[in-house]
Image (tube, rainbow, N blue to C red; front, side, top):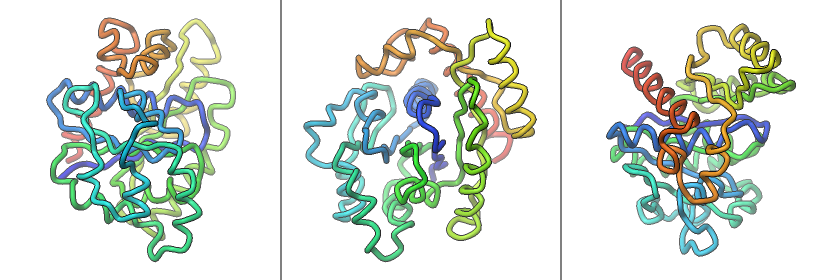
Length: 257
């Protein structure tokens, strides 16, 4: 059975989708079978893994609203051993349509049951908001991985984020845990980045990965080619950082489980 991890931060621009794409691709290179579920109407994980979101016949919207089996929706991606349940702008209306449904917070959790045995890991990429799509992701997951950028307002909103996770844990998903915190956009030349690392480590005691993701041009370029940075430029600092993160992620999984 897959380990299901939601990558979530209600703040935009923190490296959430970048982490989904590149951690999945790095684990794929380590012969792990990975599924990415794109639950963000922007569909950036979809296009970033080489899928044309404008020409989709089926998307995660059909899984949420029309009850289509996820196996019929999934597609192979540009990354080795990585499949995706793609998303596009159709999903933007799903928040409203879900409101009238029974067990509306648990639609994704029920849909995943049909396919979870086919994968080692399932990563859910949520929108940067606390709406029903994100709550579905959290309700369906074993854990949450939180990307935080090494910038001035890094911890702003983090207490609200943790409160949301705890609320979902209490009312919908008692097994939900914080998997870990990934620090992204690190610039070792600035005191600010170093201070943010220290602050985040104090806040999330023992939950911060030692692998830190640097600012890197190749990381920013890769999605426009529909590739992970692991495939776009495997020798770049960004690719090396995500490869290290994948190994640390796996090591901690083995330690814990």
